Length: 203
Image (cartoon, rainbow, N blue to C red; front, side, top):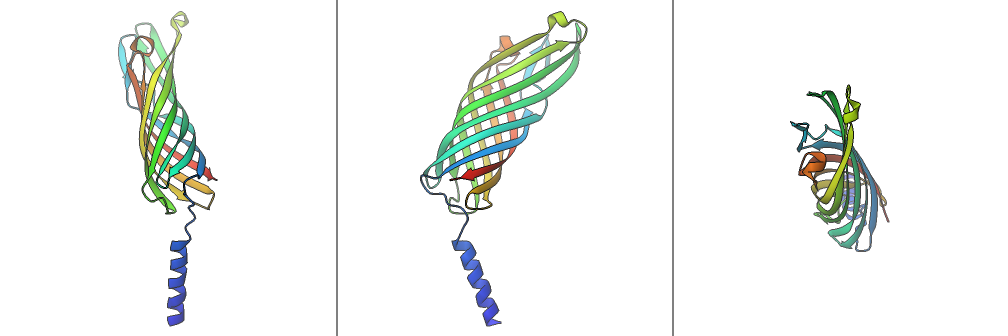
C-alpha cells in the first residue's frame, strides 16, 4: 500500500513539474481559428432598419511572439461572412449579403504562463472593412455592392490547452468593432461577437 501511494505521489509530482507548455520569452505561436460570428449592429436598406447580416462562419490566422512570460504581441487576420437576409421593400423582395474583415496588431496577457491550461485576455487594434451586396429580385437595375471601413478594435478572452510541447488547441470569445460610413453601408459601425476554436503550433 505504501509503495502504491508513493508511486501515485511521484507520478503526480512529475505531472505537475513537467508541464507541456514551454512559454518563455522568445517563444512564438501561430494558429488557425474557425468559428461563428454573430452581428450586433443594424443598418438601413431603403429606409428599413435591419440587422447587419446573420450569424455566419469566421476564419482567422494569428501569429504571436512571447515578449514576457505572461505577455505576447503579434498580428491577427480575420474574415467573416455574416449571412444573407431576405426581406421586402417598395421595390420588391431584396436579398442582402454581408461580410467583414479585420487586420489587427494584438496584445495578449496569460494568467498561468507555466501551465498547460492557460486562460488569457487579448486586445487588438488596427483596420477593418465590411461589404454589403444588395440584390433585388424584380428590379436588378437597383442592385448595388458597397464597401466601407476604418479603425477596428477587438476585445476578447479565451483559454489555450497544450496538447504537446508544440501543439496547442483553444477557444476564444471576441467582441469586434469596425468603424464604417453610413452613406456607404447604412451604419456608422459594424459590431460582432465571435466564438472561435483554434489549433496552433509553438516554436
